[in-house]
Image 1 (tube, rainbow, N blue to C red):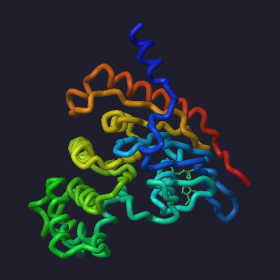
Image 2 (spheres, protein in one colour):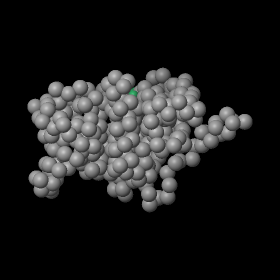
Image 3 (spheres, helix red, strand yellow):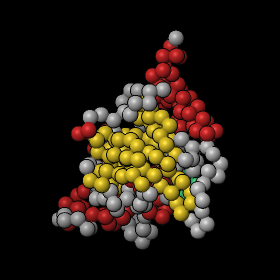
Image 4 (cartoon, rainbow, N blue to C red):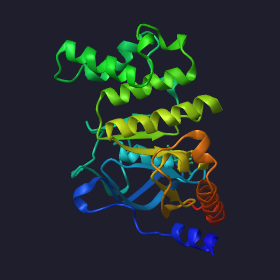
Length: 286
Ligand code: ADP
């Protein structure tokens, strides 16, 4: 039966990573326990996965599953309790040069007193780059996100969606090997969100950058990803590593009305429900 075949194909738990040489990011036995004054919280129990160079992978999981914690550990912003993160063969011990992060809170990630151009240019100032080259990179990045007409504006003069485009331009100007995105579109309206999703797929296709995109939105994960990593409830492990076998050319109308899209989103939904039920309330140590 067709439905059974689809489900069988979806329950593949084999990692989607390819041969070792193609791996850009490796998360190996990652564990993170937060120590607070009177107790400790095991946010991530044991996560292991590889990201092949050039992949766009999404991470979904119930609220509190440790998605933000995972991204912060990968980005070198938080020290893992155990396990390692390796970027292109080098262990991550602090924010690495080859990674850029886009957060949900664009309002706080941009400097209000700097123009759009200056905001995008800021991280490039520490780089060994001629001023004219720097200006070209900034302009190209802003062009890529459709903001070349707004370079001299200030962030507060722009809509939320436009501000997030500035944050994306700043990240890609840096020419990262891996782009980490932590629920970047959660704070914008549905139409803007759809446009930004298409922008990310467009940038990904044009630049070939590896993207790890964290979201709690099931539809978004299926629409964007070539692969969806479904995290279990706390304490967190990878519950399923799901390849997304939708055509590479995607658009909001056609892709989202495909029967396969509906099957995949239904499957991820079920898995997240399972993850939520398996969550042990107050499963803390100490
Ligand atoms: P998600 O992004 O999936 O919602 P988080 O990574 O934010 O999950 O949180 C995972 C778990 O770790 C939650 O139980 C949360 O309460 C806990 N946690 C997150 N940050 C801290 C912190 N700084 N101190 C203590 N516990 C934390």
